Length: 124
Picture 1 (cartoon, rainbow, N blue to C red):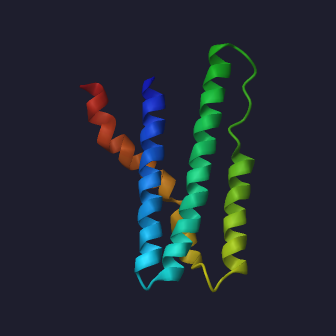
Picture 2 (cartoon, rainbow, N blue to C red):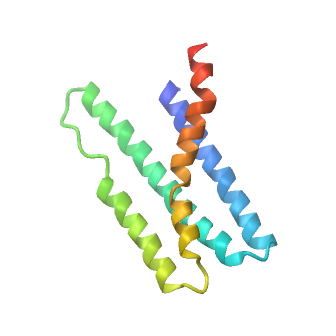
Picture 3 (cartoon, rainbow, N blue to C red):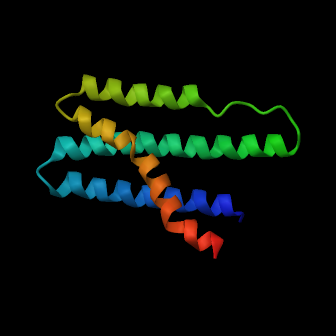
């Protein structure tokens, strides 16, 4: 595996761990709306992370083979975010809107934490 593929695999692994923790939080704490909101936002964030990684691989392969490079799927990712917001507004009794928005940012936190943790290991 290349360095980027290892990085993508690590990020997906950490997102799965985070989703598992959120499921446990929803199941065993009295803060169901908050954890369901975090879970919805994080699930959409994980989907967006997967789409971004897939499109990045396709983009780099197209550039390397000097083919026409397609976009990175910004519209698809924004549509997924819109879906999460619409769901949380429609089912307000189940999802906390602020928690959904925080959950939507979790993949970016995972990317930053992964970069910080493995920045020094790659240069060594």
